[in-house]
Image 1 (cartoon, rainbow, N blue to C red):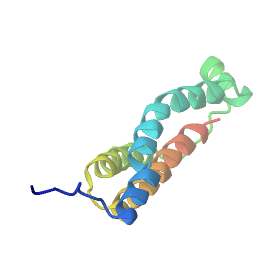
Image 2: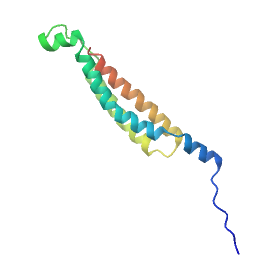
Image 3: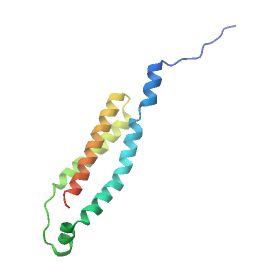
Image 4: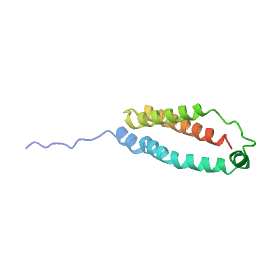
Length: 114
């Protein structure tokens, strides 16, 4: 009788798969970006200067340019897709870092109008 040995995965692959949470973190940060943007918008509108600008048209501050928000959000989406689809761990981690940086930049654009 031939006995077949069970396939054994190398411990390095098992440990790397157990510690890699880059895909989960990419999805989590993408999902939490929408509530964070809404909270930043409410925080911006609750400032006295922004409320005065909306109500009376006075003291309207020039924030960061709007195109910066668009580019940041677009880069975050591209980095999110790369973080989900890339097979290499280092690429996923770099994409996650780029996604977080782009999302923070987009939130800072919103807060710059306060």
